[in-house]
Image (cartoon, rainbow, N blue to C red):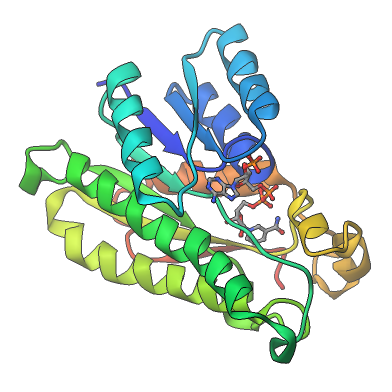
Length: 248
Ligand code: NAP
């Protein structure tokens, strides 16, 4: 059976690294992006040039209509997905809670929590044996922030990732007997653009000495964990959260 994966936020960072690795592992790959069409197209071009099959879809995961349109597009072009990676995630400028606006907190939760729920819902509708599907696997991108709390930086983001942890545990139990495994990966300090979104592009360099392994991680190292959790090698693993954080 053809393995078909949808990776939200696959235009760069961890999502793009996961897309490249999934293609190497024989998946037909769909990625979504919200703004960066050029980089998303670049990922698709690189995968197809290497002999793989790939598709990029513009869709804001925080918008239900976009999510529905994205899944229909993937159904039509690649077929029914067998794997979902809820990777799209955002944080905002480093701030103490007392300075956060309601609009900011709502934006962070809309992408990180609502987006993950909506995409998981659409995946279950396609994968669940209760709906005539063949089963499948979901991996959610959480963060070590969900346990560390990110004080002085982005407690809103950390709390949104705690919601992702709970989505992982609850959904895993809900669909375990319907052929679907649901797990999460919790990256620590990974070198991507996300730290610039928080206003500190050099954040990994500043904090790397707090990591027992003494360095930040790479997007590829996170992708390896995601692909393992999706694979049959993890066939008895569900509802778990795998730290990829150099010991931090
Ligand atoms: P990144 O480099 O900032 O990339 C974010 C990706 O998400 C981009 O592809 C972006 O698309 C997409 N995106 C953002 N908002 C979206 C939305 N509303 N709808 C659809 N796509 C959206 O981030 P990253 O560092 O690779 O992080 C990936 C995931 O890992 C996130 O969930 C993040 O919270 C988590 N994580 C990262 C780290 C880290 O240190 N890097 C640590 C822990 C957890 P555009 O390119 O179009 O903007």
